[in-house]
Image (cartoon, rainbow, N blue to C red; front, top):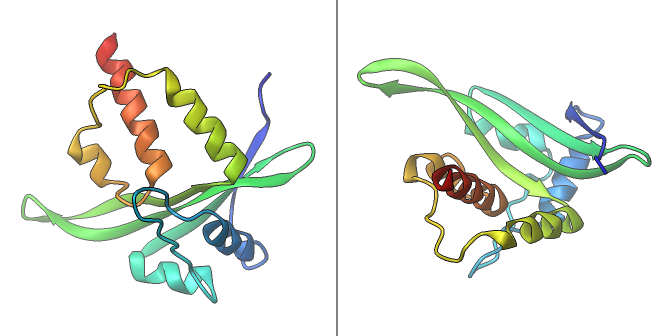
Length: 143
């Protein structure tokens, strides 16, 4: 069975759903961290980059929010030259989707190596996305 998922950019009418998603789904780990973007997700995101977008993922039939993330761009010097750098962060999935994602990763051997630090550094605060990168890297190495 495949799920129909629609991705949409958040706007002033839906940014409250993004803030609720962040409130309801703290970062898990040894320490639980709740990163909120109150009272306006767009104003809060503006400090993270020159360009930013908030994206929401909805499961269709019936339509309900299952996740979201933010994409930022900022200028940085790379090898002495200014470049536009993209960053994907604030990835959150509603509790049921996060649990399904965790179950999908149970088939990996416990000694699977972590993702290279360069990949993981792109998503330092995104536990579930980090797990996905680790799983993808382990699968790629096993081929």
